[in-house]
Image (cartoon, rainbow, N blue to C red; front, side, top):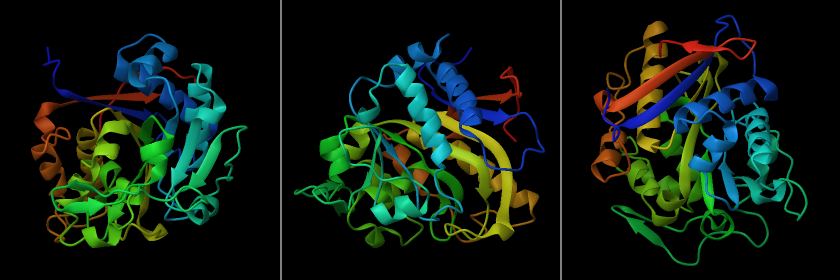
Length: 311
């Protein structure tokens, strides 16, 4: 038996180890539907979604810095939006967003700020911008995207799992740098404690409901820009309502691929991921692996699930 107060992370992987291509929308839907049901402890997807997401306008915070090469996949957003649509969410009540329109378009997203269909736009869109007031947490003092403060009721964080040349790990907490006006101030040293304090800003902490980390392709070195010399396939998603626990499990996977390719650990490479412990210390979530329940499942091509190993 485990403590019901422990943080829980669901890892859902494709069973075929030779699957070395981008996922289709249908493949993502299979992983998302299973992962949400497992996370919520529900027999149905609609029951799971109602437990994880209150009604309202839902933001999908993407990571589009690496253009089409290694950004949040359009197919992942399509799959998640279709799942929410089947659970009663209106298409126009979904906003796919990131820092800029240009980044979204170069990652393959189609912009839409109209009252029809799924919306998609950046903070730099006309009439959007950043909050008028600064928000503070610890050493961070920033304006926050109005998409988060004013336009959505809840947010799903959809980062890509990859190496980061300063932070070590680029996952969920690091992805929220794209929600503030002055991210360049908060990188040295190793983004600690800034990645924690940014995710603790009131609009970010209060509206982030769910983290789904895309770990289909792992860039295990020389990130965050794309470099195909250091790319390998994990073929999975990491889901949790604890953003720190999700990142902690992601770190295990990233370090595994570094060992697999004879690279030093991030700490040995002078990029220790200390910001997860800083996040735990201020109550954002759980960074200690021994206090995280990790449920790993593998899904076959017929959608059948079985218990799997994390690494």
